[in-house]
Image (cartoon, rainbow, N blue to C red):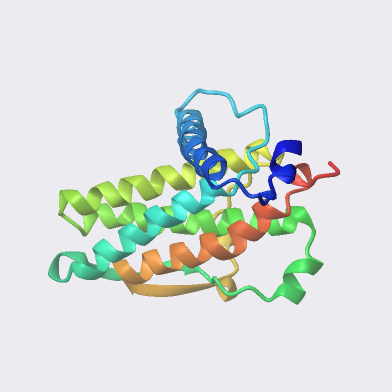
Length: 203
């Protein structure tokens, strides 16, 4: 530090910053591999909290790729029956009044609905390339469940009869479904993960 100040150089080191960013990429993928590994049946939940939101950003990117692929598909991507999905809008005043458990249940219910809807696409879509997007999305939802467990959020599995219909709507195309998926991850899921107590600096 002393040499740099003596030479009148700024505190920014573009070479070091580039090297740091290059190192972050394998770290992120290593973390993703760990999360995906935990989704295998019979394996224990992670011991340490996963607070790195770049994991969620990766899942959002894959959802965007799936939505783009479904948008291009026409005849082969029709949905026979409209699918029930969660509302994605966030009323921050209402959201912030809910406790952590209530927020978690809302997110888990939405993920359950999305998992059910996305999984059902396999019967109506025959293209193998699109099946890979569907399978990746289902795996990613399972991975988010593991992330929630790592944050000490208790599992919650809703039932069809326990769903508040006022918190849902229906979509009639695969691209619409994945747009909902993207917005739900960007909205309620991100809010829940970002504000998890175990991820706060003073926790």
